Length: 483
Image (cartoon, rainbow, N blue to C red; front, side, top):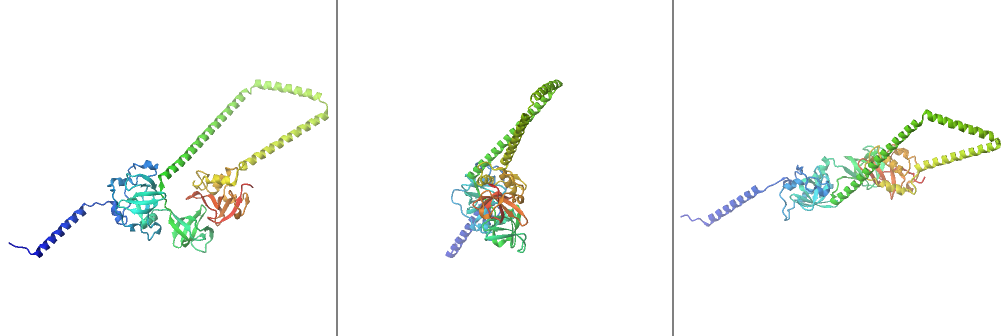
């Protein structure tokens, strides 16, 4: 019988172990499953968007702001309670878009829920809108721990883009950009060259909406009347990504919105009631006219004529009795004096009414006017508009604010600049008007609010807002109140 040598025995045993090990490896690979979340993350987060329109079962927690975006994750296997292995943080590298280093943005069409834990059964603490930015704290296989605004929690990986991928997505999806001035005073020019006219100066630290960036020049919007170019080296351009909104913040916004809606409804009801009362008064006046017309008959005319004849007879008798011409002249003189007095009083009353229409309410000051104007910060800008709530342009905003205090101002900024008394920029008081040159004429007006701040209707992007008084170079100041 053949007896194997020791060497042959060792070789055979080794081969068997290799085959067994290979079989185990093959079996493990065949049983492993992947989906869009873990495949994407391991390949720099690959495919971030997955369709899904089912109703979000926790939408009520955020008063409708939270969307259905994260509900598709509920179909996946629930993440186990044990610690999740972290993916390589290089996914958040940003060499082309430094703004997004260590950060991510939401790439869904709707808002995304932020949850307390890495599963869809956990509580919603807030929401992040499309294009919203967050700090990446940990990237798991299916969920990312983030911080944004006042919120900290988890968002499903498939709804985020990271690092340079986030910047590229913002580029391709029209996310707005903001230019922050990094030099003491920066010239805004008409064209992309230093020989073109300077239309205004803007100060360090202020931010402006970016229309375009082309090499050495960045095109910015200052107000509704100015759009020009600045040197790119003197501004820091960043994408204007929104931050998260917490459940508590959303509830407060909903409360304020409801109060505004209630006020608008009550105002509508009051207007309808006033119109109804006016219609009733008109109808009553018409009925009175009809009744007066019915009493105007031939019989009534005859009685009226008889009364007039009797009165004439009495006057004739009185004239025959009163023969003292001197007394008659004195009486006529007294009557003339009385008429002049009544006429003078009437003129004074008319002047007082006119003055009441143009003067501010008793006790009103520039501070009162500013406090009134500040209530409308955040409301929309509408070119040609004069509504403090539905939308106004710069001069329409000023006109309506002053009208509430009894002052009648012209409609446009250039004509408003001729009102009141011109004052020095070093002697500004709350309520004064500040005017700005656009390179051709006075094209913008704002209300000085004190402490170096103005309140104004800026542009369609920002609406009614506050700014430093020198966010662009003012050219004139006028005082209306107290003059």
